[in-house]
Amino acid sequence: MRLLLVEDHVPLADELLAGLTRQGYAVDWLADGRDAVYQGASEPYDLIILDLGLPGKPGLEVLQEWRTGGIATPVLILTARGSWAERIEGLKVGADDYLTKPFHPEELQLRIQALLRRARGLANQPQLHAAGLQLDESRQCVSRNGDEVDLTAAEFRLLRYFMLHAGQILSKSHLAEHLYDGETERDSNVIEVHVNHLRRKLGREVIETRRGQGYRFSGDAA
Image (cartoon, rainbow, N blue to C red; front, side, top):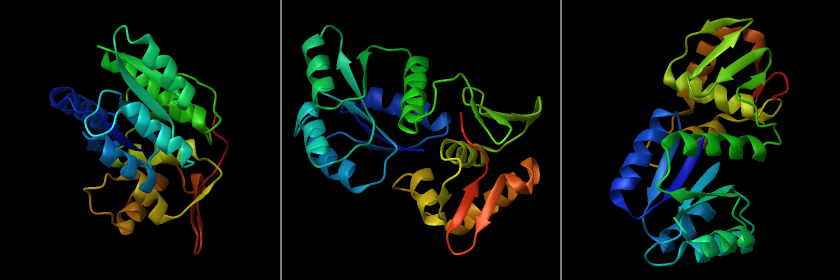
């Protein structure tokens, strides 16, 4: 899953980048509201974390421009403690959720998971279920019939994306866009390697190849 973090406080941004990367997200970071307007509208993000007190252009104006332009990406806004008026205004112009500073990293993690699942029309369950698999995002592992299967970090990221989009046909280029940040070279052949690894560990029937189109993860997510 690819996220955009818009936060001008560098120490906090560094902390969030490190934590989100450990959780298996590909993250792009910006510190200026003017850059965020363009970036959020031009790149295929799965979720955006947006601070309101930004240089260049305030976060509320950035969000309003995105929504006016038809950008429906889920947005989690970060606000200072006590700024209830900003939170209300943010929700009015299209924010999906908000988090008050200071916050615990685990709360941010859980809110991100909830928003990503809500965007896919999935129930907010402690674990993601699809094709007989249970994905534990907090531990970054998967189990099948009660047996835990070891995954590399790259395999976990790919499997999570497949399970959140179960039943859909996903091209290699689409997967690369959503699994790597803007600074990482995107090689669709690497996606094929990770798919083959997942098939060996989980069964070939779990991921179907559609010739000329991409891959389809079997089963429905819940």
